[in-house]
Length: 347
Length: 115
Image 1 (cartoon, rainbow over the protein chains, first blue to last red):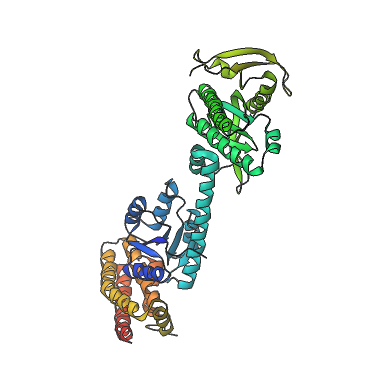
Image 2: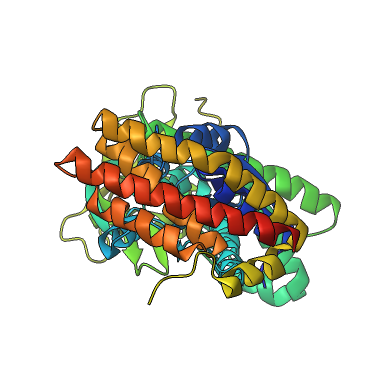
């Protein structure tokens, strides 16, 4: 059932309607505030937090349709559940409310039992949506969450230029087998916290985590100037973080861990893939494949950070870069020039 | 079949769900506000403001249904749906009928609010 004690805003130009709705809400254990037209309601919504809006349609100054339109256009208010309570005539008007994003429609005089049920359902949906938003925030970083909110979850891609990073822990399988599972999860949590921090600190977005590996994008969903340098700086910071972690682990008598990072730059198709219910922001294309190959190649090259020529060409002299020559990669017809980024190269 | 001035079942149900004391206050609020709505109908008719006319009729209809004032509600709904007529005389006639229906409804409501 719905949580009790939610805070609702009642908007109705008619005093009898306002008082009666407020009374119903009061009897159901909710708190309510009252507004006499749409304009006043929007002012209150932008000033204070409410869990739900009960909205009349026929009002002077600003009617319910206009309120719904404004809510829809407002990033902070678009998810506020709205139940339209009106005795407005005509199915077309009800349809218009729903199309404008109203959660539900109740004809006046409002039946208190129906009102209770609809409020309960709306608040429950809002709770789930809040939870989902929190998940997106936690796992997809604020940039993706913001892009998601702005673009309103359209599946489909666009072409962007950016840098892709792949990273994973060397010899992780052996490590997992040598220690209790709790320790592995704790290590992974620490690792991810440090890596996320380094990546997002340089404007990157982690969009995938698989076991001990992660994929990050620099330059999408939001454009990032200097995405090559940003990705390489993030990589250097990640290595530094791992060294700090290793110093700690050494003090506890635990073995070292090492990571490998591959970065490639170019055009890619970025967007949400999946279904309306479950989607992830990702990038697809040759650039992504190359970054993954470079990351795998760090084992062979015995260097922690490998980048491609396109990334290299946009770095200035503050980065210490070694050319490792051309390497044949699986799935690549031509040889690929590979560069290693040295540590202590500044930047 | 003529519509009841106040449908007793609707009124009793309102009292039961919202509480008799609260409904007494709500009736008072209606009796205070309704004359202004009736005046609004007339003045909107006088300046031929269709939006105000429809909104005033709409509010009267909505409140009438809340208290079970079926006859008044039906007249108000008629005006809301029809909107301003081309001929002011027919609207004025309708407004007079609404005035009379309101007077009857107000009388009964005053009696019921004490009951």
